[in-house]
Length: 435
View 1 (tube, helix red, strand yellow):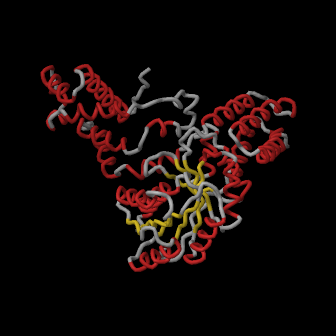
View 2 (cartoon, rainbow, N blue to C red):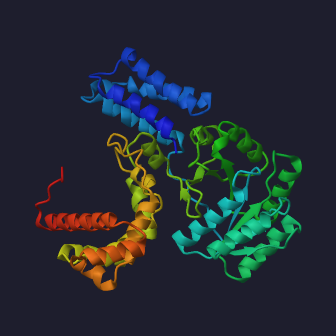
View 3 (cartoon, helix red, strand yellow):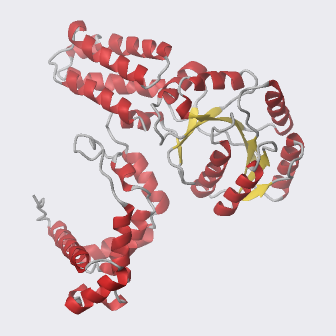
């Protein structure tokens, strides 16, 4: 997400950090790099022009001229302007009434039905709410089946009436939701290959009948500047309250995200960051700006960990570590917790300064974790609790049972012992870096 743009902007920032003072002459090259980086990321040229003018005006202002570290002040200006461009404050969902009604609209192929499932999953997990998904896409082949399959996977109920009238289906679904005390209703509407009058009329009718709290436009971030035309077309006919940007994990240049709010005044509320059903995140402009500039995103790391890791198990493991009683059985529990976080390289990128530490291109093969898990599972419970008993014959049996080599078993045991040594050093306050 934004990798190329981020690298170009960080390169420009590194250049200006070396300046003792900022003048119109020495800032021109940096500003030119930033302009090219934004244009190549497919940011709308009008947005780029306004953004550059604001950055340049503030960078040449009195505050920067008097600063002892003008480069750092410039970075702050750049970050603040990026945050403003992305919408400033986080845009919250409008929720009132019982149930709250969220209607999704968008062109065919934007990922609307999948976004409905991801949004339902997020609302249920984060807010512990009862969610109903409604199948109002009665035209696209298999659209209803797709939503039903997502509902089955997530264990979230789907209301459908087959190929009926979408307006009537939405009304009936709302009555059903009220009777069964659902907190949220997510209406998946029909998409088209392009904006047309019949599509808009149907969406307007659904809006008039059920009066949703939110009308969220699902936009494929891969379409670049065309996203602005799509949003404008929908916004002329519907009172859009926000956008969901899908496929930000793909080979996208990111320009749509940086242009949408400024040109349409429609806030981005959610972004799709992976194909998995937990791959939808609430959109925080400041967090995204710090990611783009290589400053990391610690808050998102913490929230991700809190959402999937069992706090009780983690606290118990921490106590065992402090007491020096941490064994391979505990290690296996923690390994399973870590796997819930998803691809570790995605988390590593959120660490501040990851690029400068050479961590931005780290690849963690999930097979390696699976191999470790297989080795530990091939041990008896006693061996996991007392790894010191693992001699040659036991190691051979474990290697055979896990379909790994004895060398891999030895490597795991050595790494585990090194980890225990580090834990003891942490406890005593004598920790030294192992290099």
